Image (tube, rainbow, N blue to C red):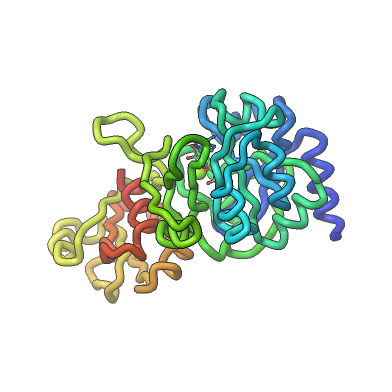
Length: 312
Ligand code: TXA
Ligand code: MG
């Protein structure tokens, strides 16, 4: 156990904030049993208190102690996908207080696989409440540098863990009531979940998803307005905006555009690079970010979900 991990666990015990790498995105962690620590977490992130936060553990056994009702489906999903990029919403036990569940009767539980997260959680020996380590509504962090850029000295310690391997947030499956439903798509796909459960799961809407009529339209969004365009419209849009636009596309750079990032055609590689790319284009100071829409097949579901949110 490294000295830095021990120090990080001490900071958490003292009510401090520790950002740490996970395989999905970086998390901004606080002791999930400490009301004041979680209040500071919400204040620093700028997050409304009624939003529930995911609680992280080093093992399924520990995670499940925060739930009062663990259906067979939860055991099956945990056996297959934990540690890994999956969050389960379950009925809470008395350990999950209102300040982590947003007052709901359910709790979000996750056992991440990143070795640094595993070491920290094993050393801390209790639940760590951790939203993605970015300012509320902004683009998630997939490197320690992203976390420092967003929070600077407001976070007590940032653990280094390299670039996040998955690059987008965990798949969230709600099994707290009735038939299992997907609240947020991720690397673990609907068909992966269905294969394990042996039954169909529905796609539900989560609290952060874009609404159609005004309201909370943008989440995971850069400050620069972003627009999703089909490949066949990209050229027309570029002709309109020229040097005022930054572009995220599959094709080769166009000489009329100064800020152009070329993305991989593999959905997992795309997801891995997405947030770093959006952050980079956001800092270009353009009027608009144009995003070439990826293919519409099922492999791209999670990427489409994040792009729709980023583009409001
Ligand atoms: O990959 C991830 O899940 C990352 C890493 C750090 O673990 N965390 C993350 O947390 O994305 P956050 O707070 O940015 O997103 C949590 C999502 C929110 O949409 C929230 O509404 C939902 O999880 N959530 C958490 N607890 C819930 C509950 N009890 N019921 C319904 N939704 C819940
Ligand atoms: Mg988030």
